[in-house]
Image (tube, rainbow, N blue to C red; front, side, top):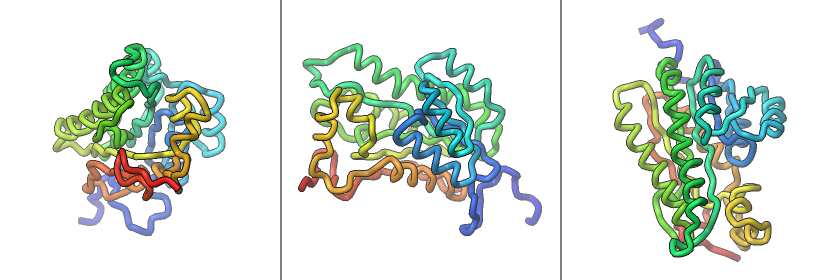
Length: 263
C-alpha cells in the first residue's frame, strides 16, 4: 500500500542514481587494496562511508578524496574495536574486509606465530567487530553484513594451510550467522575472490616483490581490487529480499584454485 514503505527500505527502482543514499557503510581494511576500492565505489553509489584501518595517514587521505569518514581501527585490539563502534551513530552495511596472509609454509614447517596472526586478523577480528556492530545493524531495519572471504575458504592447496584454515573459518562464520539471524532483516553476504592482484597481499605473504610478482606472472588479466568492489556494491544494492549467499569470483584465466592459464 502507498505510504507503508519503511524509511530504511532498499527496494529501489533500477534507475535510481544513488542506491546507497541515506545509508551508512562501514568498510574495514580500507587503507589499501579491496577495502580502499570498496570504500571508493560505495561512496560513488551514495553511501555515507566510514573507513576503518590502522594506517591513518592513508585512511584520512582516501576519506578526504571520497567524502568519507576515517576512524582508527585494529580489529585484533578489543579496545580499538570498542572505540570504533562507540563512535558510530548508525550502521546499515558492514563490509568485513580486513584480513591477510602472512606465510606460504607447508604444515611441516608451520610458523605458529604466523598461524596465530592469520587467525586473529581474519577470524577473531571479524567476529569481534561484527559482534560490536550488530546492535546498530539491527537498529537500521534493513542491514547487510558482507564477509570478504576467499576461494581459499572453499578449496585447500599446498603451502596455504594457515590462510586456507582462516578463510574456511570466515566461510563457516558467514554460514552460521545467516542461520542465526534468519527471520531478522539482516542479510549475510559472502564474496569469495580468487586471484586478485593488489599492491600488498602477496608482498605481505611472501616478503619480496620478486616473489609477489611471480604469483601473477604470465596470467592474463588477474582480478584487481575494483573488480571485487564492483561485486560488493552489486550484492548490497539488490532489493533487500534478495540475499546473495555466496559469490565466487575469479579471473577468466583461473579455472580453479590449482588451474591457472599462463602465457
